[in-house]
Amino acid sequence: MSNHIKSKLLIIGSGPAGYTAAVYASRAMLSPILIQGIQPGGQLTITTEVENWPGEEEIQGPDLMIKMENHARKLGCEVISDHIKKLNLNDRPFCAEADSGKLYYADSIILATGAQANWLGLQNEEKFKGFGVSACATCDGFFYKDKVVAVVGGGNMAVEEALFLTKFASRVLLIHRRDSLRAEKILQHRLMENKKIEILWNKKVIDVIGENNPPGVTGLILEDTNNKKLINIDASGVFIAIGHSPASELFVEQLKTYDGGYIVTEPGSTKTSIEGVFAAGDLVDNVYRQAVTSAATGCMAALDAEKYLSKNKGA
Image (cartoon, rainbow, N blue to C red; front, side):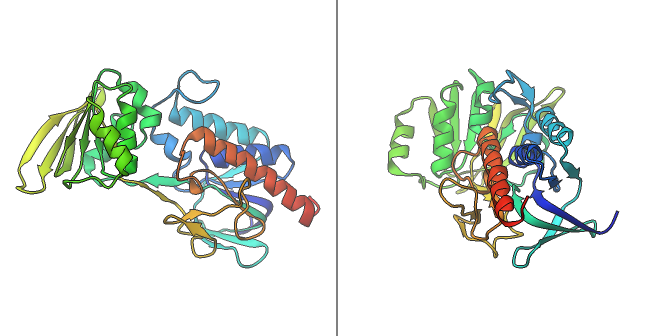
């Protein structure tokens, strides 16, 4: 195979947005190429049970992504295991340089590289991701009915996660390294009024405690930020709520962005500030961050790309 590969449509990213875009683009006979990136399947590959995907009462996150990949392949999308390290959106055709050394040229591009939750950087945090450590209460809160869970953070996201978890958990521990919250006052009021929530002030998570067989979180080690004393607390799950970062490093200086790197798109569209470049999924969404909403914008991006190519390239 040549190191110079040309296509009408290049899709970068392989989460629900990328694979859905691939399905719709394939059905439109655009012969898309999809580059999977360093984490094929995206954030759902570190999720265990998924119970909020329409049509699937329960499915493992990795299994869902395998099904989506197979669907895209069956319809004709060329799925390539590679990682884009450089992207030029200033010249046409657009050019993406991969770790493999291949150059992918495309008349249009759909960016679906997603966003990554910000983590604490603890060794056992990584070990128990999907087994008690989560960054999405909406995704995983249901699995903690009548259990004690912890939320780490002090902003709007942390407070909202804590409030949501009270629907399921018997007790929610909000862990914050300071003595005051950054969240909006109305959210703080709701938090303080909820008797199922306890705030652990001036506490920093030092490590996650868990069991190996079967894998699961059993507690946390906390450090008091004032006197450095360590304490152990029991918890069946911990939700890290210290924000998300969009995976937009490749193109953040070429496209209009907001809120730390999320891509700006036209209202009601996936069009970016560069004609022929479209963005979908968590890369543009700092509010919902759900697999189903990512998939929906992937569909929109494929339809937008089809219209663009039909108008400009005679596709």
